[in-house]
Length: 366
Image 1 (cartoon, rainbow, N blue to C red):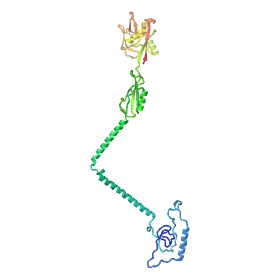
Image 2 (image 1 turned 180 degrees about the vertical axis):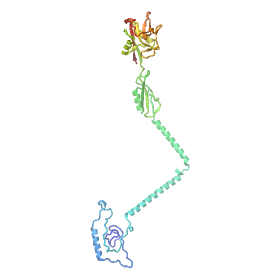
Image 3 (image 1 turned 60 degrees about the horizontal axis):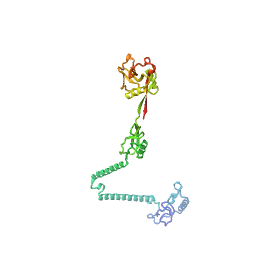
Image 4 (image 1 turned 90 degrees about the vertical axis):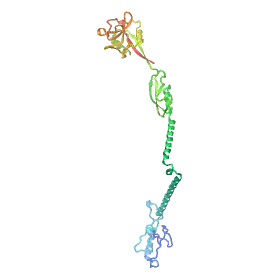
């Protein structure tokens, strides 16, 4: 007999096909027919020969040349229309395939998992209800703001503590050298900001006079601290007065002084006036040019300083003849010095040995 599923020849008494494992379906007697109908011997012989040829044909390879994972499958034999068998092939719906059995088993697994999840959720909700937690709490929503406030307060206290822990105490940098102050700031995680310099008579040159952030105050790491560094004592200007004994005009004297790094003498007070007289000393000079000149109705100094101090002789300045626009220091018959306004050139009034001028130079002293 042959398997109704795959068509392989099997033993007449076999319960399952030895090729595909399908259960054997035996043909039932048709009503009124009695015993199974006999098969024409000629047709049976042809079928047996065809079946033998089919079994000797190698099984088809699976996709890609690999053999299928299940038992070898064979193509169904071709039968002529006149061939008849005692039982028809089984319909596909009558045989349960392996894929269908696997699909059913997977469905059961999914169902079991869903039931387990539902049970766990229900158990958790019941436990929260018993313990009065979450939505089942008896304190209601009023307790939540209080808890939040407490948490916020704790957070703020923690932030304050962290900020205090991370802040840096600014050191006192006064009196330290520039290098010492810079290294100290770097060691504390602070930055050197803008550095300016100023004169100081009490702080040594190159040392810190002041700082922008007060010593002892707290600052964030990386903050900048500006410094004021001493340039030492402010230099003072000393005025040197020198007699140049030459018979020149006021204008020529002015040009000479400027060409030699000075200017015609400018006098601001009694002390400077005395220095000019000391520079003339016991020389023969009796007419000495100074750096004053008439500018309209007023007098000016050649260096632009205010003409606020003077020592005019009696009746001076009088601008006699309207050409007396230059300032000269003259010694009168009484051997007394005084200021006079005179013309630019006085060489026609005094001999050359009596003429000269005072050159002033400024010297910076620290």
